[in-house]
Picture 1: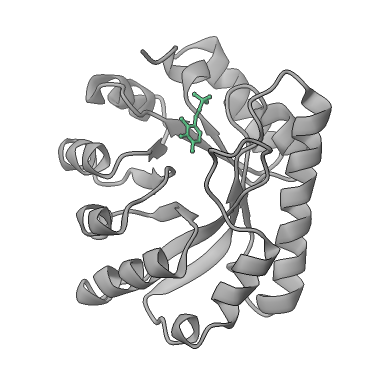
Picture 2 (picture 1 turned 90 degrees about the vertical axis):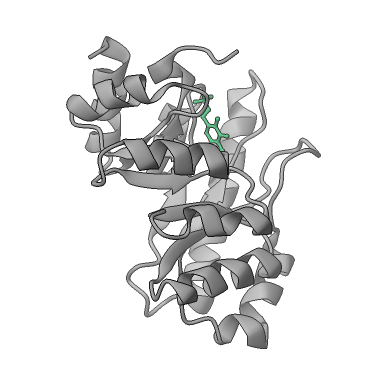
Length: 220
Ligand SMILES: *Cc1c(COP(=O)(O)O)cnc(C)c1O
């Protein structure tokens, strides 16, 4: 297995964080190589690609849905997904709860926050997140469990800015923890950090880094 993998794995383990190998656009054969080296957490950002890969790969893989998820695609991944990272609306959460209910399971989710300056990135802010968590609908969801937060930093060379954005996500996590999840041990995940910034993310308290191109090579 490549040196980059060993190094990233070591840094994440040093911080007791989880390395999610982001395998989007890469063939199942490449995933299998990482699997054989011991990697068990993989992330994909398209629901159908995720489903198709899960069908042909070992069943003890923990699959992470990391990208923006359309409500009409939830049903394809609901049977097996281990964590949905990008929940950014009550509507999406409602659909996840519905599909999980049909399967009689609970699906773990992260609330995605917009921490980057770019307009294109999805995500909640403090106000929209608390509105969601205060809504009567949310209280009635029995088949989802919110276990933390997720965010993506701005794509920039300015690492001070990136660090500041990760600090913002950590502080949102802390505020949510004390206001809504103080008695819930499961609420402990901060999913932040990608190929270009995972080291900074780990320094700022990431518990899950999502690394693609550094492991699998550049995507087309
Ligand atoms: C593609 C992707 C990643 C991984 O990006 P790299 O820069 O290749 O490490 C992480 N998170 C999300 C949400 C992604 O879509």
